[in-house]
Image (cartoon, rainbow, N blue to C red):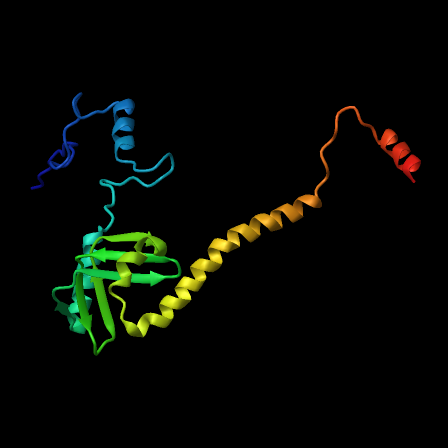
Length: 184
């Protein structure tokens, strides 16, 4: 005996049955697609925006490297001045760490950038006799800069002679040439 069954055409159970609620119109679908797009037209759609690394990860990486080197904190330092040309970077009450074996010094805190002339009276008390030569050189440089401004003005006056003279109203080239011939 043969049993013949009629198979009904049906969709698998994991697919939703089509009805009005599951069908989306094109406008609604485009709104949803544009909401997940991070760039403009033609860019890749992403579910969420990529978050960039913050500076805290860099700080943690730096601290772990310093720990590996073996830096030790140096207490009771009130001020650190770093001199570069005519600029001084000044740290007040910094956290100073050092590793002599690795020749590494770490100064952390809030820096202030100042001109050397502004901070010179404060620094003079800290300098010892071994820095006397450097102080003399610094004084000479400052003196050279101050008279240098006067010589720059004189040089500008000399350059003024080479410029085209200003026009005098009522005077023409022909009249000036005739006066020159008459005087000669």
